[in-house]
Length: 244
Image 1 (cartoon, rainbow, N blue to C red):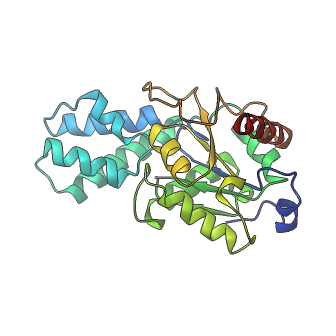
Image 2 (tube, one colour):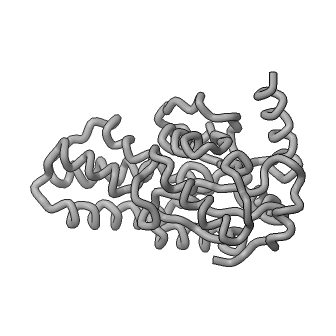
């Protein structure tokens, strides 16, 4: 991964947040409905009608975690490995035709990367993350990425964000969880960030399945207008709120 800024720039950021982690799906790109459709369509091919609420279980989780749940419940007549391959193939084909970025994502990532060290922490595979960032033209803005294969337990467990903090601390010493700001969109992702001790902002505009995102530190519709000054003001607001 390219490095979007120098370490010293991150350390000299204003008091409050010193680094930023982004989820991918539903946060930088609007892919959750496409994922649910790919799941529903494949199961229909196998003669199974999946409850739409079950198809939405993929939101915020790794494919491995979500599909383990679906295969245990519906028991299609093919192996998990074959089923996963077919679903992922259909999902990727759909994305090639209809990859939608979250409004303001390109401008926000560029602006924030000029001041903060950043990483993508996702339940998607590293291959899919790299593909998406390349399509968005944002690969160079992130110091590193973590995909589903890089940590043991899927969101809502905190493993992914704790691992990201560990990796970043190899480059910038003495970072604490409360100095990390996370952008997320799902109930599972918000829970993971909070369990890791990090502040989390929820993107509400991609909440297609009415997940409960009230546990986030703040909510925004999309990433329009998000820049370093906005982050500094958020840090101040949260500090006042927490000390009230």
